[in-house]
Length: 163
Image: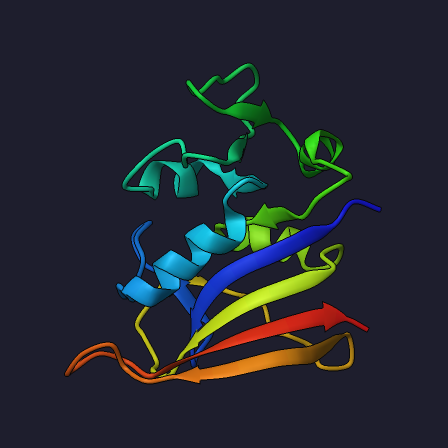
């Protein structure tokens, strides 16, 4: 089985986005995302791809999922199903699932690892991350972080592995 990891920042109420945009800006989390995913394949839905400020993501193999047959996006490899995206993944290294909501939901049953940033606040959102079932997932690492600046949010880095 190919190593598949999910990477996501979620609010206390599992919110991850609204109107195809992030709900917060945490500089340290963005740097962590870049550090963890650089040099690895990243898999994302088309809406997530178009929400990125810089695209395709540099120093990563960008695999974009779409249900539009023959759709092409410059600088990206296209997958037209979850199964096809898995076939395209690299068996020799971690492959990162980076959203959006429906993509996370479909990969939760097959991912081996979760990199979660928990933002300790509820947010109004239209996109949510699936529940993390502790019967299936084991918390293996946890780092509490202070807010980056006044008026920002406390957050925690968590890593889960499938039991």
